[in-house]
Length: 325
Image (cartoon, rainbow, N blue to C red; front, top):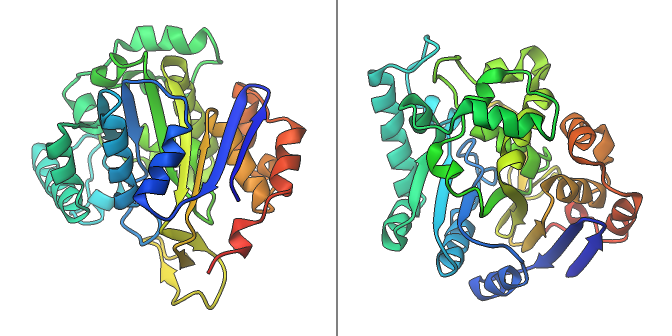
């Protein structure tokens, strides 16, 4: 399936890798500069849904040889589901103590914690930084955003950029997304940079009832980070890939009750220097019209719509959801 494609401003690389050595060869083809900020997908611990720890470790080890690396994410349902309900807009110290304990457990169980220590890579948790007010000047962030895009709908988003990340804005922010049947890839992955319980309540506030505001806020947080950083996307489905094909082992259910299936060892890996166009490419490759995915359609209005040639090229490639083992 290997392909390296260029579309106007965008470069997309699609490949199949099954080992660390092949992954490193894939990464060597990518033109990115340090310092590096890596944003994985840690929304939950559902099998096949969160960033593969092994792939994340491969990436961190590779990048660490090229320059400074920071790993970043915020607390989410992977933490709160293990704790008593938080009924305030801002976490109490007791809430934080419980949440931190679940995060330490997650990082240890996935094998990520010892790797961070070994490589001397800092983990910057957005919620922790916002609560401690270690953030970039919101007014500067607002001016940067509005110089390129329409203002965000929730002004507090300007105050959610950790200062430690802001200082590395000359480098590359990698949205490391999962290949999932729900098509929650690079663009939506950045939604996780909106912290919850830091003064504005749960992240549901940014979803809205029946996800009424979800697409809007996904685009808005992307406006913030695209204004400050060179944001690129990597989508991985190397060891596990969620799919809707019955008979692929046993069915799983997400924390929210949705049924899905997992295919293993398909080796899929993608890179795009524009996360939006990469997401659109994968949508089309899987037979799904990206313009009918609300957050991608809205993002295209702000960041530029993908060309028809990109969709045509995607249609010529094998549908990975039909190739799963």
